[in-house]
Image (cartoon, rainbow, N blue to C red; front, side, top):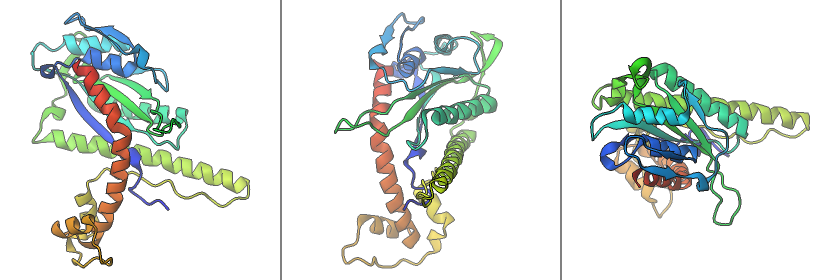
Amino acid sequence: MTSRGDHSAGFHNLRPVRRSLGQSSVHSGAYIARTAWTDARTGERRSYVRRGGLAAPVEVIGWEGSAESLCQACEASERRKDAQTARTSVLALPAELTDAERVRLVRGYALHLRDRYGVAVLVAIHQPEPGPDKRPGLNHHAHLLESVRRVDPAGRHGLGEKVREMDDRRGTGPQEVEHRRAEWARRINAALTRKERERAREAGERGEPAPEPLGRVDHRSLARRARAEGGQEAAVSEPESPSPIKGSRRARRRGLGGAGTRLEQAQRAAGRHAQNLLEAAIRAAEQGAER
């Protein structure tokens, strides 16, 4: 049976597009949208048409123009050779949802980013890669590219002031990252709750018992989850098994006690699953932006 905090769809990867690393918002956007664009600033063209794999049409939130015009504006609005021109996110999506439900989930999150920061967001949902046995994969995921500046029709290239609250590494930056991950987890859990109720209702109509819970996403770190459950004050005890597992030793060293052990086991299993599902997609996105 699944439990709260063990669902692998909590994966939320947020990274800037860095010109100093040879990356381009236009090329990153082309990869996300599975298309071919030429960066007007450099004249370099990249094509990702053959990759395919879009699960839904590309959307642009908070921008009057096309997806390409947004990415071009992100590049053109920055003059520095070491500028961060955009932010990208990779979001794991629950396989239990339908395609339409996943679209609504991601669109709602993109609208939240628009409303909170005043930015424009390019959204694309990618189909999962097939597994080693060629069976359909379950790593449904979405790619987001957002401007680092607020949308302003009177501004340069349609973009105005920078979203400084995301750039403050010692102040508001970590707080905003925490907010984004918590908001994404909240939206996933709400969608999973709706799906559970739908499945239970359908099972009841068929006269069948309700299916098992779908689990929930917990964006917090292992240490924070342990502290929330009183793990720091828990007594350190020897493992029940004569062959202690590594997770038990790490938990004791951190002073998390039994609560830390259980949480580490659950998070390690869920984290491995999520990481294995999405690390290939992240590597491909980074390579596509750097080449």
